[in-house]
Length: 284
Image 1 (cartoon, one colour):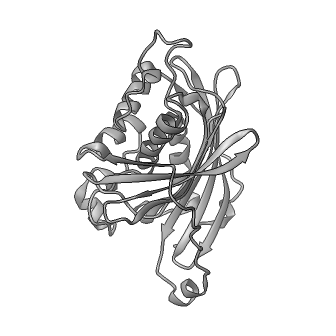
Image 2: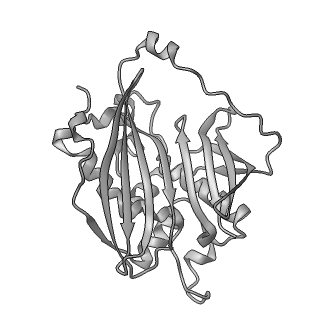
């Protein structure tokens, strides 16, 4: 059954999250990031949350959309297609963050449907801390004729990357990330359900893979300062499996609105892209 396009434009009631130090640090550990900014309270300004921690304060809002009966979404066929996240201000321990969701589009594609959800979150002072687009892909029957008529994207020739960083996904990564992020979709923690959904087995959360790339960006482009990372955008092109080593390659891509812009792709051990069209924007 297709998604109900009458839901486009629907806004959902806001959801409030009380941010704790434990939650921040558990999230950082869930993707193997031990940056002192997330752990050392003696730093000037104290502890801040990883930029990607913002997913924890918007996740319940995403789930409220996905579980909306009128939408008629088949969650076993739903996969995460793209994510675009902006980080206007850091989230800190003790913050009270309120997030709201809105369905802004539902589109029919050759192999299924896409749904774009806009999410905005602000702290108790009214300062924005997270702006995101969550783009879901609902797999359907493949329309070969329509698929063959869709133009293929031409991959840019960027030359040699300025950085290439390898990271290994732990065998238990998905279990830790599920608890820390709140995303307990069984395809990430239950082998049988993952296979029922047509997957090779448990797959790593797309947002976990994205969090790994955020560490690459902060460590190599922001001199370790997470507050300088202002935006990440990715397209998830292939599942990552627990135990795999992923390699992120980064290229300089000019300037935008006073920020340095970088393009990146992330690859599995076979050289296949698991993230394509990655964008990182870094403040001075």
